[in-house]
Length: 461
Ligand SMILES: C[S@@+](CC[C@H](N)C(=O)[O-])C[C@H]1O[C@@H](n2cnc3c(N)ncnc32)[C@H](O)[C@@H]1O
Image (cartoon, rainbow, N blue to C red; front, side):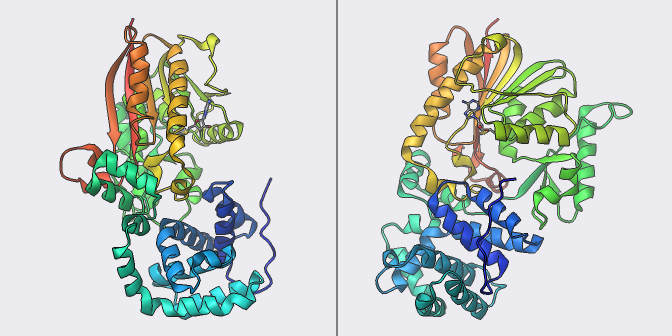
């Protein structure tokens, strides 16, 4: 296994903070996703469950508040943030985040630990400055916040989003909704678990809806009804255990999926006996959802170009008892003549900017560039073209993304339809979360979901 080695640490810094610090350092190099970096360091440091949770809270908290923390550091250091070594900036970000947002860690412990961290990274000579900034912070916090209120970049600093994303959101949603969306991106998401229903024998419980209700009840019981809630389709749960350790996940009774991500398969409506292709399928949430609906009758082919991610699909399928599903590694920007017109239903879940998932992917907003939108829209169109060829006459096609840009969503579908107007029809489009797009008052229950787009197209006979 290719595990990252955590550099040896001789001076006492608690393991969770050391892992969080190393993760922030690697994040700056920008080559890997934050959850991968964190996971690798947590594994190689053999963090306990509690320490994993704390390092996760520290890293995600710092990234959700990055611009605000940097504003504070800039104002409190005499020569500005740019004059400080990067590792010291990371140590200060961690320290200030704990002082400002976590009330269960005493201030003196945060300061002492941050000073020890300076020694641990051979930055001892600068520890006096770190000590002074952290000790002064509580007394200066209100004045710093007032400075932010007066700053022309107030919204960017308060919500920690790059200017181009704020401009984009203002333009598309209007100022008030854009601001609600920016703040929503900093609220930790709940966990949604979808039950596997098809494992319940069809007799003596004949209808699918009865079996679904039974599967939900079993999930609620397994998690503990006090902690878990249900919307009738998924179970939401906030509590402590890492997902992979949940018994219902390990035993293949459930998988993690946000309600917004479930829309595409609901729109496709795969039925037992059909031939279905799930394209751009990894890590396989929608493959599991389709497999569950097909109830082992028919054919499901799950396709992705990334061999490592496809392995995750296979693991998920076998964990949930769906070994009958085929997995294929293939670049779908190229044609696939042998499979042409062979499917009743095709889902293409295109790679996208992921703007609907910023709550979960806290590093994404800093990695995206405006040019990504156009590039991914182009790729989405090429995937949609190739996917459409796999659908038989009279069959169905769903194009979906987890982003919110018009270019990657509606405009891609419109471009496709304008080229194929005789053969293809748009049946329905769904955009989530509804509160961001609808004309009615904000619905708080909707605020809980991610953002997504899906369009159902039908092919003429
Ligand atoms: C949004 S993710 C899919 C999520 C997945 N459908 C699910 O529900 O778990 C997009 C996927 O597209 C895959 N992908 C990107 N370019 C591709 C291509 N040219 N051909 C096939 N798959 C591709 C990526 O590897 C990635 O797994």
